[in-house]
Length: 118
Ligand code: 5GP
Ligand code: ZN
Image (cartoon, rainbow, N blue to C red; front, side):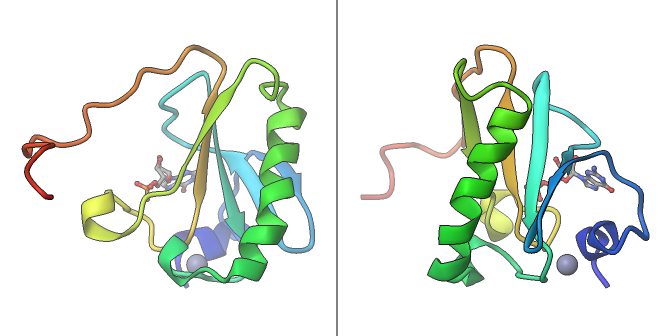
């Protein structure tokens, strides 16, 4: 069983912010911003690439409610999902990072030539 499935099953403790029948949101163990929350489906899905449109539809208001719960919905926040090797995904269970609580920097995403692909 993957590490986030264990969090869903409460076999690994986590700091839960919001939970409903389909999703759970908890604080990232290694925060990259003053607010850094992970929102995940309770069922195992490998990544966004494997996610159904139906799940995305349900997850949208869940993520919005997480932002409200921690009061970053007005100040602004960022939602990120890393996908696979090049996306930098380290945990193979779909998760959305919800980042906020301060003005976020925009990243230097790759050392490759950003003009190089097309
Ligand atoms: P990824 O790199 O896959 O997009 O992000 C994985 C995230 O999960 C990382 O930000 C990492 O800090 C977080 N993480 C990994 N293991 C645990 C854990 O056991 N508990 C919590 N709360 N976060 C975790
Ligand atoms: Zn899993």
